[in-house]
Length: 634
Image (cartoon, rainbow, N blue to C red; front, side, top):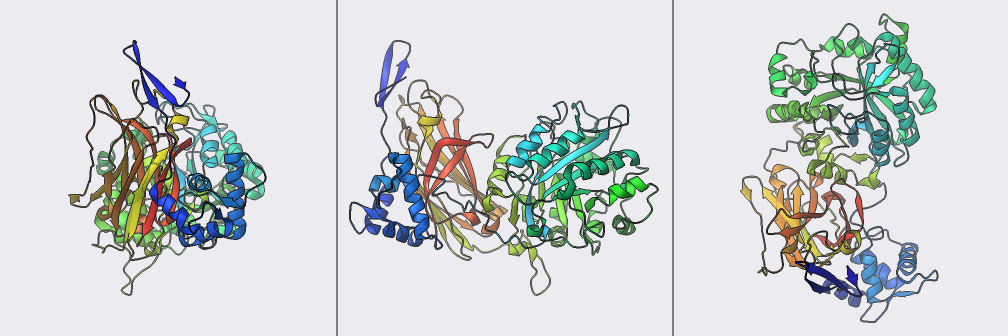
């Protein structure tokens, strides 16, 4: 219960412990910035706030109108005033810095160059997008498709199968106990939600297990439901990938053309079928069993692009002409050959996570070179029946544009995916780093295994609330400062973390570097009577030499922990690095409780003092919980 400005915790059912609820105070760095830019006065004018935004926060495009808008929001929220004052007090200034929508760690607008061809972008992609839960027995529905699109996902996967009477098309995970959903419901859901979050194109990858007659029904259904939204190249296929900007508000179909299915065993793209649940067999065993299979030849790829050729069925030919991005797969033995095939026309290749790992370990440069001309989609291995996910970093390091994830899944890999695609306004398309799309004077492409020198150092300063933003300058040094955190007492019950006392939060910063562990742990003395401790954990996720972690010290019995710690992370490939933050409530007698998480692309971080919002385990943003952090690049 809460009485006045205190929380009361009942001990052993007979007496109460009383803890005062203390309001957060501005950290010294915030006070110093206020006094410096207000010239020592008690009030900071709009002109002085603009100077702070440009010089300290490095928002060089900030205008007087932007500052007026900031002040208007602060006075309306804090003082419930419609008429704004002409100046900020220190408390107003501190309040502003803690508003993640006004002072967030990354740019909330679309700011990447969107005029490059489609394959120049990482694309937010889902796997088996229709499943509501696990891969074996969950229901299929249009609801997770709508949810994914509203969260910014741009790649939707549908598995198409005949219904029991062979006269209609269902969407389900084949040869499992998943309950089907009619295809028309999925198409309608896509049309209704495709551009709610982002105007940029939605790519529907179809896993087609249909007869020619049913393919004709799919073609008719797609044209009737999507209408002018459906992108159909005049030639029947993409010779070159168009610019993403030119594809706004378009829906693109991608699959193998019908020729690949007629007379085949209708295997799932990138996988082979079998009478019993072959989709979930061990991929290593599967690789051995497929070692002698004949792969698609060069002539097969040429056949993909002849939309007008006779395929034995006029209806199938109409269906084929709706497939804008033609897809193929590789069956392990000749993967390097498939990566090296010289095809002038745009195409998409699908690999399982294990196929990618093998290719990356044996011929990484071929993978990177392939992605400089074509799309590469990577999907989870079949044994992930619980809808778990793999680390996407290895795929991104090698240029794979479409890393397909189980969006209904869980875990830290999905947190990484969520955080990565919050960049660029959450539009679902991120421009790939120049190093992944270029070659040196010798014609060599990027190799993540090379011993790159440190090109940047990220410094993080952590306070009670964390404000953060990191700006990127090549060959620079950056700093992250964790000041503080706040908002847990508003989003959680006062006994959520501990029955007998306020929480003891900590933050973890994790820096695991190649062949050595650079973890730093700071543990103050902890009283045996204070069982709950808050700590922050911070991780750098990226190429192996950049991987890192670290932890803050433990803060005891405080709903608004104040750490005021600085952490430094040297980075070799900052373009592919992410900063992942976890807040934990320390419990000596049991597993630490989860207090929130956030994942931020380092190259997108804005310098200065920033408010970093935290998210729950499922990636949903907490209403009030934020950190105040400072990011700096030197």
